[in-house]
Image (cartoon, rainbow, N blue to C red):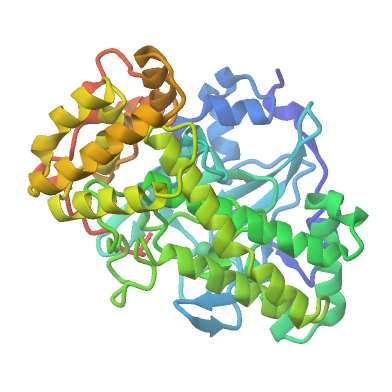
Length: 487
Ligand code: AMP
Ligand code: MG
């Protein structure tokens, strides 16, 4: 366990120099206070969880103090936003403080979001509000607990600094952790500004630091791109299997590591709805729940375009062709597991599709359905769940197919089935209304709810005593909360 002043820095991205990022000091927030910290994220830096309660912790992550070895930098990148190219974006309100390596030898970027203006702030104020910082914190840690690759969050620091959005709010900062903060948009920036040398430097950096095994391949850059395609296919399969809607899949929000990145108006589905749009500024539904799958490929094509100086178009196309089949294989595998199946049959895909259609028509709660399906034997569970469906006759047909399928699956005891299903079907997910309750309390200075919710979500598959209220469908007011991009 380390104290805060014992972190070891090795700022490899900063060393790439001024063509890639700009030195900027964080702009402190007034009256910093700890809102919430993640013990699991603290462990990634070998930090003793107790240090989160010390005043210096809040000072470090609100811009008042800085380690001598930190080198705060605003990164430059561009990207496709809602399908159109924006030539220059960059860290407009976040700073890469430095890279820390832990005792296991892992490097973690420390990124402070809401740290004030940078040369890339454009029209923005460089700030993040408490509401969006809490949402990013809860989502990162909850996704990780579900087994979905994501950036992590160390803490949220609240403040007294006023920040204007639709109304006056308070500024906050979230300390994000990831092995890298490089986005698809980094490659696009150097490609479209026609800076081949810097683009090559960036590609070498990513290859050496994050895809060293690809060095051994005959075409290292192609191997790296393939790996990025594979990781994205797997990540998006997990989003779809667990009902996560990102909301702003612009290429500047896509991580080169294939992890969920840059949280805005994201949501987990309550009722199953393939057409769900969580971002209420997304009028066309470009980033609707089911569109995330083709958009994943669209984004990879945008990255492929930026990699044409290094890889032949034919090879890129071939690698892109891996995306959909890989996605489908991962998705079906996850859905089989969610249904408690251990073997594969040809009709499984169709069985999943039929179930989702029935759920869609009846507005069935996506998370609770799968959890309940594993509570009891298949026959008892479907008999109980039947009442949730408007089209009961339709559900009965599905239930017969499912029971037959379960009977043909590897024989196992009911107890084993339950354990297997509960290990993949969460009881607790970050429903928008739960986040909203925690935010409302935190905005009035009570951080107990956000801390409790974070705790519950850190063990999503485990039934926790006295936490029934976190495993409910949303009340009416919490069903269709409008979450905007203004964060
Ligand atoms: P996002 O929609 O959060 O992914 O942000 C898109 C771009 O806008 C990025 O370059 C951000 O750094 C920038 N940005 C978002 N909010 C702000 C803000 N309040 N101040 C400055 N820049 C911002
Ligand atoms: Mg972003």
